[in-house]
Length: 249
Image (cartoon, rainbow, N blue to C red; front, side, top):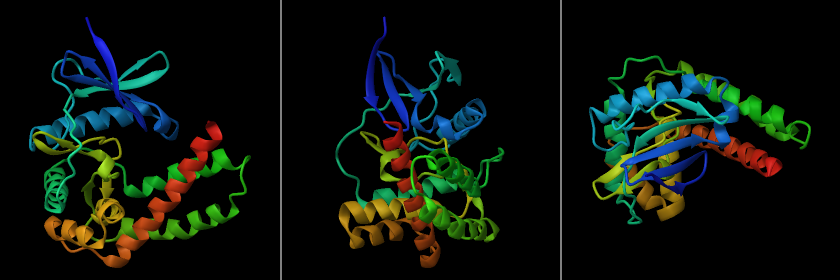
């Protein structure tokens, strides 16, 4: 008998299928942004399995059953290994090394991945969804300005597989150390996309010195101007997503 226990909500609803070491990840909020959820989840599972064979600091798809993806009762879901999450904060060095290890492992992935510039499609979907309910002219203008920034990143040197949504919320603290989670946005882009997300959370939680220590532990130089531009893209996305969720509530 399975005792289903919800253990997380957000872009996905996470349900631990006790007593098995399996969680179901049910796409909820962001499913609207993906025209082909099956392809999206299939890629995520493939990347997760690839990484789980090469590093411990990742939550991989379960080996207990076929991880999916599945479509049931109008919901898309996949199955992943269960990990015990702790509340102990990570040290700056752990965070920086975890991101570097992830990038080193992803560098070997040969499967097809979308460019990070595909985020423009998601921004456009959100703007269209909000067009009848909000005065979004300023946000639309910001999207147009940042579109050039995003395309510049796509043309920049150093394109490589990246997490695509690297943040503290997707770096779980477990008894076996930090483990990356939520790989649905893995894509090809410059490292600044991931580094900016992690450094932004580091500054917000612990200040500039901690953020600098994370970057030092990561061990690769980043373009400060590129980090700032990525922060601007993240900020616009966050504003649009929060407005959309508030409008749908």
